[in-house]
Length: 250
Ligand SMILES: [Zn+2]
Image 1: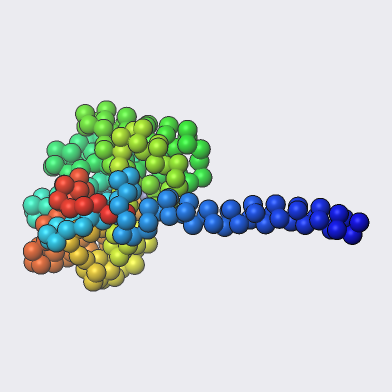
Image 2 (image 1 turned 180 degrees about the horizontal axis):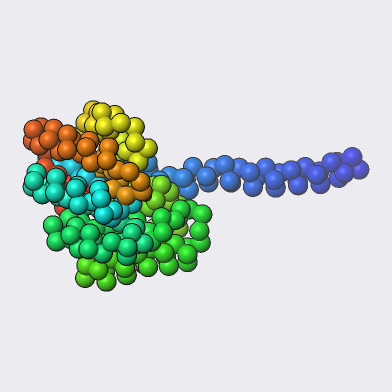
């Protein structure tokens, strides 16, 4: 009698234990899947940098276009025969279409940074797709070309972004972990310069911002960064060009 009484709650505990174990054992696999083997794996959908020994880097600019910073950045890039990638917000592109055309005319790459700078992790897949599609359409209407790259705002993504991006024929581009100078927080020109140059290596994708506030520090730092990279023998190319040069790493 004692056995039958005590076995029932035990079985229940076993079931709970089994569920907890499945979750605990499954979570790392899920995490690995989402983060694609975090740093060092290859996932064709999530790209952080490129594996190459050639001295090439991709400078990228988020949150623009802006009528003040973007044209100044463009003239610096032109003077240095450098190319870069601009991950634009659909709403900013709509507000400043002439700046978008200027970026395109100069042979720069334009990527999708969502329409309204939404956090793709907190919305439904349908909302994510609608927002990204709206940005695609806005940019295509202005330039005649739909972007083939996207970058999630805040670098925030989860597994459901992968099918959404695939449906829109967009590769998800993040950035090299050592190449986020946090210029958006205006830490000072010297800080932005040293944060970028201290760890730069071939195949890096560097994150800057040409919108979202006063970007004078970014512009000033960029002049020094371009000068130094050029002196070191680096070529600055678009992300799509970088992806043709080396193996994408996630
Ligand atoms: Zn952003």
